[in-house]
Image 1 (cartoon, one colour):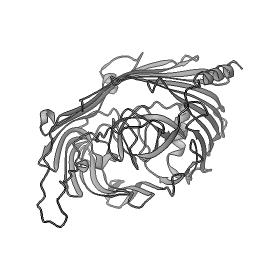
Image 2 (image 1 turned 180 degrees about the horizontal axis):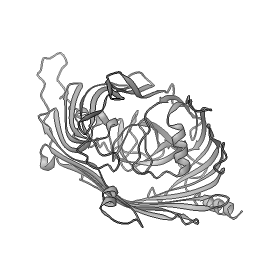
Image 3 (image 1 turned 90 degrees about the vertical axis):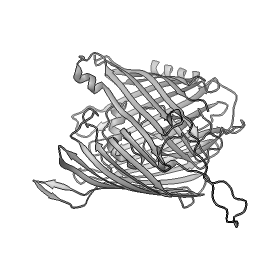
Image 4 (image 1 turned 30 degrees about the horizontal axis):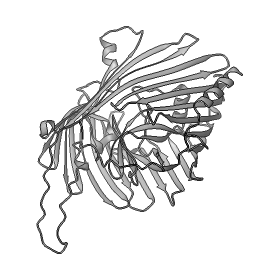
Length: 545
């Protein structure tokens, strides 16, 4: 009873009445994810501004998770505010206040040295019929930089004595066209330490990880050469590449090649024995409906001079047809060695297909099939419950429907199905969400959600409610949520999971690009209670526009 009173009191406190304002919802999706940034594509970014916060549909609920860094006419470059993995294709939404006149800042996307994104506009001609030679626009070689430093701590408090604390610091820095020249530099490093562990050289190497450290140089107008550890946008599924990369573009077709090594899968360090090399070809066109992008990459990976893997990767993204988006990726192995016998048979190892249809502004349909390999996480902030859900629902067939009930009410429903021949029962998952972008008389958003899960070894339900509220003109963003978990395990070897989960988070932003995030999640079970906390202080810095 006391827990219920506390929860009701917190709910009321963070629902204090403010002046009502009207909202409109702008929807988009994640188009690309790099180590530090998330790229989001909209039909139009007319009313979105730098420092706005975007919502994403993650783990069957809408949550504020992306901070806008820069804007172009149809896309945004954002920084994630969550530690959860954000897949490509994740739905994104922005709540637009109708009564306030948003002034577009007209800030272009970061001037990163990526050939596939470099576009120069030819000057307008006096008349389309006149045979006037085109005049090339000179490249403005202005130095720009963008960086971020963050320090965080997280841990758990458990009455069973399983307490732990961890500190984590990150540093990222990109500087483009150093001193107005052709050379650029990028880096992203982290240090993470679980307190209480014995300190030695082995743990030091495990705690310190370099995700990006590379120099890039423009050769001519269309070619870029990069040296170091860097992620290739055209071959992102391979992860970071240690070595040299060359990319060039001829009109709408891009080419590239690389050679070097891949990071060690155990500690993400440098391993000279893991040699890899390959190349890609890509094609991109665009009309008023959207872009069409296709790419094909072939690579070979070795382990101590012996061929470990030879494979090809194809990806196609098509938005040329109005209201329809199609995405397809496939990965095939071209080499196998079984019982010392090498063969070059083609073996399909990974497939992902997604189709999204939006016949009107009120409703959209999305279906996808995912048979990609499981992802290796070097660090994760998911709870045991969230890891369990992700493990059972990542690979399989999914159908999702989004419907705009009214100006301020949105409904979402999805169904998931996965069949495995070695399992007695298929996995079935059904999710329903009801979101209110503006509560009557309040400047707050409310989300109600339900999750029904049925697998071969457990089944159960999760019911939840989430309240989001911005205070002090966006200086403080708060979130309060509650989840009721009731899972039954079939084999009875593990006790049933009965949990009441209450979480709270607060994000504070200053005009000096400083932010502070505080969050706490308390889990209450019949026999044990425990909690997790997370605190992050972040400072961003960039050149003045």
